[in-house]
Image 1 (cartoon, rainbow, N blue to C red):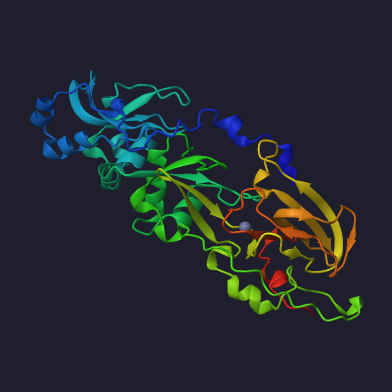
Image 2 (image 1 turned 90 degrees about the vertical axis):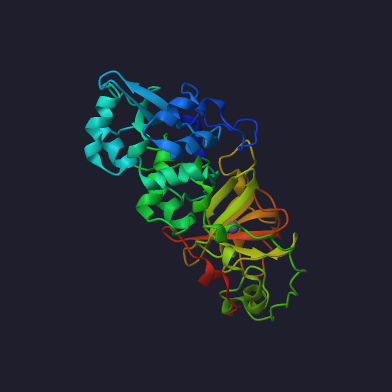
Length: 391
Ligand SMILES: [Zn+2]
């Protein structure tokens, strides 16, 4: 929970990434039109009808900073229809050539074509790459002209750290992992091509055709009625070591568990207008109506009881949170509670009512659940500790 002490990283690094007032992202970006070229000159050019079609398509998202333009090189005394791109951080002409054309040896030509412009990273600089040199996968993606945005939604533990995580976890297999990463680098100029690091709440432009659609959350069904809670037989506390948090028959819990509820599940949640939250699940969700009683899975001591609020805490997604340490040393956290009935430092056993299921934080209102996280040295799969009968 030390994360709370840090400033939100996006404020340090992406002050400009606030979303613009929800414009329809299908709207065409006037600036991306090849305004300084006449239709006749395109047709007359060596590039033919393919580019004419491309130019009319004007891959036109307001957030896409690349566009087609005719560029004239004074050095080469040559006009070519080109992709205008912002200068990537840390890439030389050879690196840019490798990324955009798939061939380093184009680097020298591109450098000359841009009149030997010296690349200053971090400045508002653009360079031009002749369209005829572009990699086919990039041209295909631009021609499809259908982009969405992923928004990284890391829970308490950062789990989506770089483009590799996105390419492997949230995109389909129509391209190789390296090609997917390259496409993301080409479309998202603010991502460092060397580290490929991404940040919580960062927007990532992604071709719609490459999204792994099977991961998009289906309509979440209304929670089923409260589980019938079978009272735990009265046995001396010393004999009781483990139970599940609802104190129900284990079959009740198993029956409700869906793949998306499990630890490590990848989730894509549509926000509409081509925006998707992407997340790797760092806990286990036990779905149950608001107000369901919660108990400890094993005796221990309460270490934290806190309400993380939106606008006040970086961990606001957790909502009402309680945490306890079991006698065996596990740190167990319950999130999104409606209320809690315990205090930090309090000794708890299997009979202590800890709190109730709620929808605080970022919990989906139509899908009340307790999010359970189990930590040993790092966060681990809660299943073996949580989906148990009373012993
Ligand atoms: Zn969860």
